[in-house]
Length: 270
Ligand code: HPA
Image 1 (cartoon, rainbow, N blue to C red):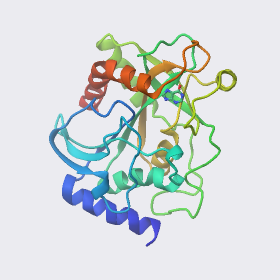
Image 2: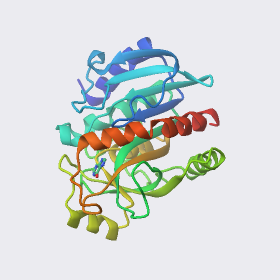
Image 3: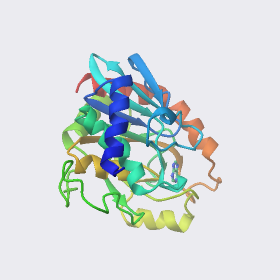
């Protein structure tokens, strides 16, 4: 079966079980519970043919279809990471499935380590741009012309209008929304303090182990993207505390209410 046949098969099952959608939402580590939809229909990733399975705790591993403010949404509670051993093509399969379901706008979220020293754990950050520091591009290989061009533009990877909308909503609700550049590292080990100093020199405000391949694929197939990071911890070396996945999940939990409000209101105004 070719890659595009695999996508089509998965998309057909999801369409039958969970329905089409205009907005796609990917909920990252510890954020799985931040949004619930009206009339939710859920499908475990394990019931979707050809679909990878996330192995990380803090990820619920289900596809959810439903509505919010009468808009059709599809949502992933959990996602796939490069460090789990998936191929770059596996990581982006959900994006093409969303495209086939009719999605026009993708909202990606993640837990990230704060590199910008003005940030504090619990802050939310609008992703204005990214740096792919993994050195792998998920579009390598034969181009799927039906989805997009061989050489997609990344000048406006993150939609400026959607970003401005997020800031307006944050201001209206007195939420402190930061702005920044997200740098993708493979993980699964956290960074060394020297690596974090390097990422700061490169212009990163936050680092994390996801999101960038999904955004590259989303731009390839013409989706508008809004990216939000929850700064769950300050990155290595900023405080002397060792980093732990449990802390990442716990901070994510504490920010859940703010996060949920922001995402719901953004969707309301789309
Ligand atoms: N580094 C990389 N990824 C992360 C971090 C971090 O400090 N926190 C949450 N995801």
